[in-house]
Length: 447
Ligand code: OGA
Ligand code: ZN
Ligand code: ZN
Image 1 (cartoon, protein in one colour):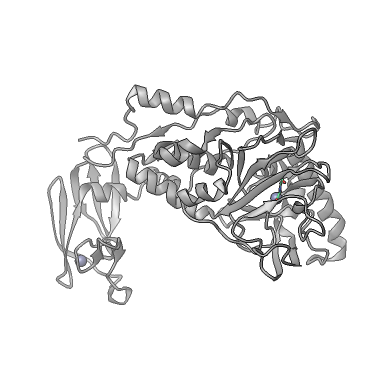
Image 2 (tube, rainbow, N blue to C red):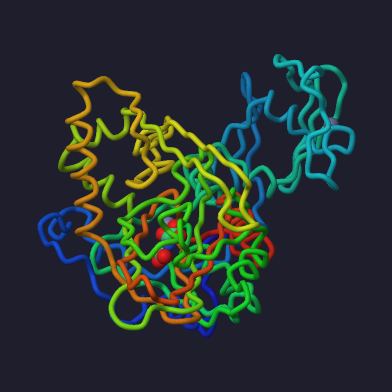
């Protein structure tokens, strides 16, 4: 049977999901400066912000083999849906699925590397449309199913599918982006909505969750996904104006756009800011921006500045003592990383913008300081011009990809009883839950 990778979802379900994934209509203010807004550039936010994320059920079973040939170093298979792939001998031997080579209970390879002969070759290959049986030169026998092989084909398309299962493609957004909205109740009671939320978080790095329960709803939600990532500020921390605060967040001062915990080498992937009590009157608004969007804008329009930010290491630090019992008694964090941290494949791994926690000790030479500041200021201005401002109401929660998006808040009166509660979730755990839901609910392909 042909593979129906993008078979259609029953129309009722599709309509529900598409509707629930549509950008929401609540009016939000956007960053005021028009100077560096990306309108007219290839990164227009409207191109990305209005795309609903359609979840397709993937059908992974039912493919058959139509042709099997033994090559020099691989077995070449043609499947009945037109896909062809070579399967190298060494890979086949390493991935033998027999009980002595592979433990199904733990989904783990038992076959030891010390027993792998990288020159292993088949002495006999038997096949029908469903299975291949191989006898190896050392006498070991293996059997492989057509579906299993098909999912692991060495084709660009199959590798791209798996790469998207590993990490969803990020979609940058700029000025005018509207929050996707979810409610706490649906996230904890409906696994499909939970999957949609995790998809939105991974792709855009931003959402709004409403109707959060008062007593640490943020932790309840994180624990519904996985578990809270603790920091030296404790398990969850209360953001309210405190005398002699050990962190600027615990004052009423304006916080410019920043990533939390830039002073960690392993920055938590997600931050959740739950509003228990908002400041009445003006002040206390939340500002958010997409660092991925700003980084791409710089790469395209100011490549020298981009290069400086990706190659100049900075120190970020947080030194202090506990202000409340939940915090570590004493702490002295110090990280060293560029503002824009990329992996070898050119993916943006982390953005570290934090005016309040960037160290005054520098890892760059004096002549590079002025160009660094100019580049950082430019990057900040792009973020600011493409930011979105939203005033949370009691019960709202803003969730952000903290390694990618920045948040800030406007100053409010020092006498205010404004009260937020905040906690973190590691990206590994969020992605783990997203994959588990995809697998269990049968949605292999996400677009
Ligand atoms: C923080 C923070 C934002 C706010 O706690 O790190 O950025 O709205 N708070 O108080
Ligand atoms: Zn085996
Ligand atoms: Zn913060």
